[in-house]
Amino acid sequence: MEKENRYVVVGAGNGGKAMAAYLALLGAQVTLYNRTANRVEIIRLRGGIDLENPNEPNGFGKLHKVTDNMEEALNEADIVMVVVPSTAHADIAKAAAPHLRDDHIVILHPGRTGGALEFRHNLAKENCPTQPIIAEAETFIFASRSEGPSQARIFRIKEAVPLAALPAINTAKVLEAIHPVFPQFIDGKNVLQTGLNNMGAIFHPALALLNAGWIEATSGDFEFYVDGVTPSVAKVLEVLDRERVTVASAIGLKARTALEWLELAYNATGNDLHEAMHNQTGYYGIRAPGTLNHRYITEEIPMSLVPIASFAKTYGVSVNGIESIINLANFIHGTDYRRKGRTVERLGIRDMSVGEVVKFVETGERD
Image 1 (cartoon, rainbow, N blue to C red):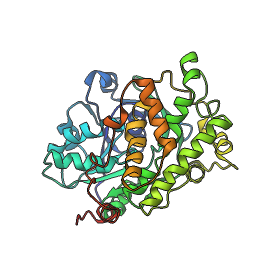
Image 2 (cartoon, rainbow, N blue to C red; image 1 turned 135 degrees about the horizontal axis):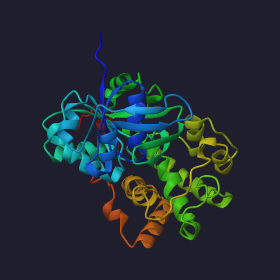
Image 3 (cartoon, helix red, strand yellow; image 1 turned 30 degrees about the vertical axis):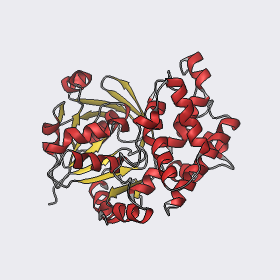
Image 4 (spheres, one colour; image 1 turned 90 degrees about the vertical axis):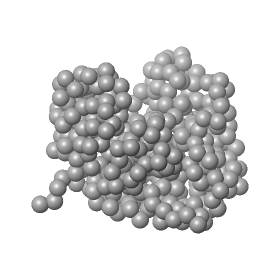
């Protein structure tokens, strides 16, 4: 009889708690890792997480172990589900590097833009002695929120989520391994494709920044994707989306438009982005961020828009809209997200031509 895979979920935030409880309720052995022990102390004492889900499974997800020790967590797992803000991917790679095995599968949920590239580059910098499979999801599979110290809620589960391994020759192995628990994952071609199909880059930062006044005046007391997406805001999102698709084209990729993605992920359609987003029933009930000091800006700008702009600069594409959103974030937060964010240098591909980058993400070979 084939051995069932053991999982570790890295991160106990909105997504991590939902992921851990969901897997546990499906009958998987699940270890929850969080670097701060007191954040998961109640979960450890209770032995699991309550999950509210409009469909099955829901209820109390009993966990195998809860720990703040990375070595212990990885020893208990075959598949490593990294569910943390992408700003923490480099730190997770550094902490995991001494303890990863060749047979580990590490999946970033999601990678944002360049996540798997950055993760592998940091493993190399840490002289990781093994060659685990690294993969990334194009987006997070759940629309979910933390509802308490040991409670999580799933609003909606996406119907199809592209996933790619680095290199892409390993993607089929990853999909086969997680299919028993997540049949929704599909072949995402390669990590350039998943990274440039990152819809968080389009929907999150601009939507937060263009609703800055309302967020600050109400502490986010409105429906983010419904009230916040007016016709004019949607037009800006469409400009950013066209720029992202153009950058992908410069690398030889056909990226999905935001309209195509909404139909794939949620079966939501419309004549334009404004109409399609309002037709996505899973967005209803999701409140806006309570502050502008939120991952929609602090994560999505440096980990999504900055790498897209870096690709654009490297391969000769103009992205004035994306650059404008980065500038607005810099002004509001008084920082330089370009300096902090993912660039072709930090992804380890600075000196590669388009052909060399594509070969590397497909086969793992460097010229």
